[in-house]
Length: 275
Image (tube, helix red, strand yellow):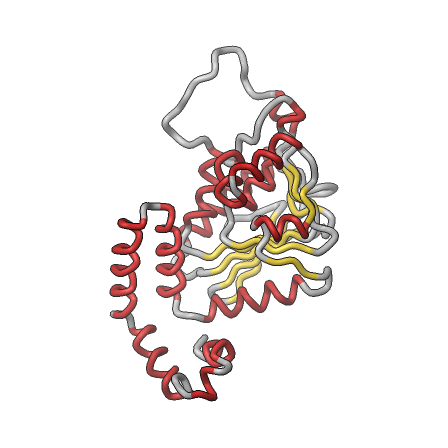
């Protein structure tokens, strides 16, 4: 594992928990960006990992925006050019989105600009009632969200709501963010940590192949249905041939699956199938 200055990574079996600490506001400086990019590559390459949780050491700030002073140093002496290649920030966000691990953002405080764009690339996002705030502050600065925001936000919350977030530059509170679909759920401040940790451990306990291919199948929903359904059927067939599937399905029947009593609490029953 790489030696990080702004990131603390804890490993527990197939689960990695990342804590960001770049006082005073977790600004995405060039140095922090470099570490996040390196971490994304490291996590993506780990063959054993299935779940990643990212949180902050500061409950008031998950990740602030990209360093504006650094942006002012970007070269502007020539004309703007289109490139067929993803830029470095896009590559980092896409790694977190597409890696065959479940990525979870535990957003207890503010998240803005490039930090919000990174969080929006995660699979799951959870916030704190009355405290989590999302802000895309680029348009007021005369620029636009250039770290995936104009592409990810409409996919998360719809075009009109993305327009409001991006063009207005105002805070999106936790309650609205949950209702609009940016956040999966919101919690009291003392509840979010235990809840996210429990969910992460639960997912990490299930057969790795099932977790990875289920994510791949869901991502296939971005394709036309005529392509997504055959891919889902193929991935189902792939999993059916794994030892984990055969073992857990048999175990499910042994511990009360498909009985009236078992099916009335099937979530608890399925939790027993984890490692």
